Length: 500
Image (cartoon, rainbow, N blue to C red):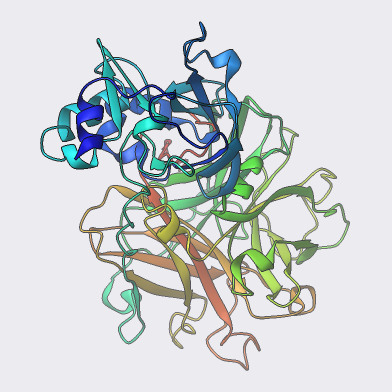
């Protein structure tokens, strides 16, 4: 109990209680953004953590924890940092840095993370206390660290590591009873004014184009035999527009329901933190005078990071030009042994056989490949993630097929992102891509509606030889609900007046 006496008073001086000159400091910052210790600093965590450091007040020195004298830590895993140094002999604490260039100290007064931990834990858990209170300030001290040679804490607490996260929401595929079979939909209504709506999406992720991935998926409130595709245009770092178009091939299909858009921006430099295994935005070389599916890639991901397992890959297209054209990307030729994949791209807002719209020589495929364990590693950022096989359409539906994703989130405060993957080595020969839209998201389920880009039949392997090899890769993310693009990612639901 001697350590508790020191912790609740003034810590022993280093010449009274010597400590090893060299120490390895370890920081776990995975849980702080959702922890009570975040307190009034919660806004700091709306931007991703990009670095950490140790600040110090060595015995007898005049420098008190100045940021200019910080000692940077090294990132070793997702939001985990380490530092081995001989430059700290007495008082110290961690500092976190975010993508906006802001920093957050553990140390400080009662509102600081360490101050909040002291207030909540000092009496009940004095024997575990790791904090010194000197006057109105709180900080860590090497002479009261449990392991002075290797101090290890989660940010703002006396715990060595963050508590393990809850398991991700279990999901299951309901294929026996298709949502289409129990949904009555009205006939398509033609209109001469077009089947699209465009809207501006403002905000600046804080990095140049090419340093972040931008993916998006259309979203409907009810289950309908309808899929809207999403593409970005006039795309810049600080502004861009999104085009949402029904897959109609006649350019004049009236929508059956209002569309919303879920979109996500992810910084390329966050790959090293482990949630994603690659982020890219590459010119797809789609400039062509021919119609049909265009091939893009191959592109690579770090398959070693996920031990040869299958990543979850989301894709969208964008162009810097002011052409409100719409395309559907499908992942194919995914090779877990080599860490490579291709993307097939089709145009969806003009007749299938025409070449209109392929004159843009700057169409980019933006992709983000997630670790399949992302929901385990960051459960507050990714609620659920996975892949589901899509059943072949019925003989009646022909071009439409839906699969219901069941989960146990118990709330509807989330949004869905999805991309179709085909188990195929060559989409350009088969000449098909399949669109997907998230629909009717509820507290325990969400429907993923798919359809062929050319309204063609794929109800059998005779109609389409890959009909048994269509999958939807999905990610369920928090519905943040603010019309501002953050530096780590943003999910939103802008909506516009449907053109009729």
